[in-house]
Length: 150
Image (cartoon, rainbow, N blue to C red; front, side, top):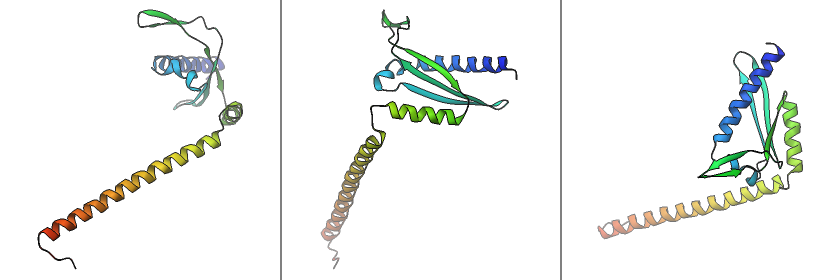
């Protein structure tokens, strides 16, 4: 495959990916949720590895408007893109994004893990209480039938 053909394949992939992304109902809100970088790897059965597509959001005037329930809304910001060729480049990019993030990923992971443990413990306690209640109810039913258990 020539360089021009390879560039054309990448262009087509990026165009299809953008269309799919733009049609997603949550797309206009991604940057508001703090999601300002998206990466996706692509492979082909024929050509193998095609690269990694990286989108990032910048707060620049795009001049784009979109129809939202009977009135036009001006889109804020712009999603730029680039192709990365190797996993090393993607890894360096991810480290850079993590470094620049105002959120401490380790602390966030710790908070989430603690909350999951708390919820699981609560659910476990509720399940145990339910099982004990069922055993007691079964025991009371047998006593009412006149059966001695001890």
